[in-house]
Image 1: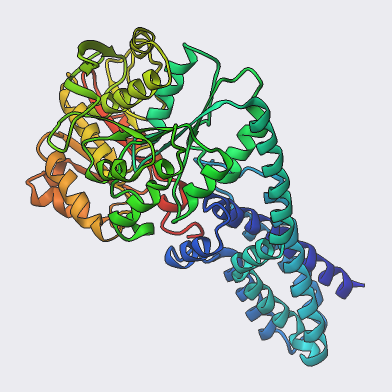
Image 2 (image 1 turned 60 degrees about the vertical axis):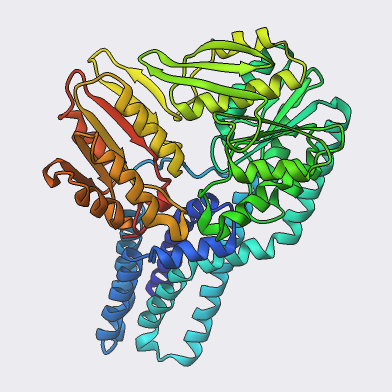
Length: 543
């Protein structure tokens, strides 16, 4: 009876522990968009091997082995120690609230349940083999050893479950895609596709605001830019009254945008820039340009391309299209511009700029900040007028833009402290523009809080050195989040003369914010540049 009770407690204890650990790994798997190779690469690179529950299991295995001579005492010990194991497993996975919490979608639930079933069946099946081949005295020691191995294989189990479900998920996705295509056929909106290494989300936000002042408009929300994400928005939100549908298109590999264009064939395409963002994924800027060019190349002969005329890669895209290309920018060195940004100035209330279009000049007070946002506004303005929106309507909408969340969003509190929230930016151009805004806004002390940038590949050291050279000469204090992740940023700041006494280092953004609470005073201006997701900020999710 006691043996059966002890054995049952172990199975239940590990079953619950597996659930806790599986959920934690599933959270990171979801952040990697269920990409098997990227998830396994993160797991190995970050050394996120489950430690506490595994260590407890190994300790119990050792204890079981040491008392193997007193066989009659083992069941009682195991019954109690398994409960101890369960508490250790729970402690190992008790963590603060995640920045991007796990969303238990239907797909996430299917992967989770199948992974848990496979894990438990494999472990319990292994126990039956242990019963046959391992002496009774060492059965419980072997049991815990096998459990520790199972814990370590949980990420592999998730990947296996995802693979096993692929045919089923593929059928579901095809059904959703058919429904989305039918909705698009029925509603028949004018589709605007937007892509770029940076600026695409802000340009989408600005254009959606302009078009909504002209006719009912739907834009993919936030940073939704994948095939199934766009499919879900079409199925859930696109209505018969929508005249315009703005689609942000992300490039994760060559062919990604082409696939999106097959679902949502654009009448107008905007390419904001070709840059170093995601260079780690594409390996070269030329490959990035090739991936982004899939959007304008998908246009029909009566389509419209709106391209960044200052960017040579975007300029080159216009030479190989079956349709007319329209360019916006700040300088005509690379060629003529259909919409030109003549002057840009950062003011406490926003960005003042002068726009030249169709032989006229327009002064605009944008209630958003940053020279790059003025460029995004120029792109949206040019696209809107080419879609038939009167210039006066577009200009009026630009003067009443709502703030763009987490993209150079400026707020001054009652305490007289100005916060610049640029936490959704992670590219060199955006970083430099944010620093310019920090410099230009009035304030006593200029404070930068950043973990640096990600996915820059071989350019990482060079680009961090470039922003460090600027920041070192205009910031009074800099807070680095996990500087060991990008040591070149810290070293470049010091090489450019920044005082080590004014350099603070923290393990997380939350820690930095807590420290700043007691340090800030009236007149301070704080820039939060980039907020890494959980899988980047934590050196090991299971440390």
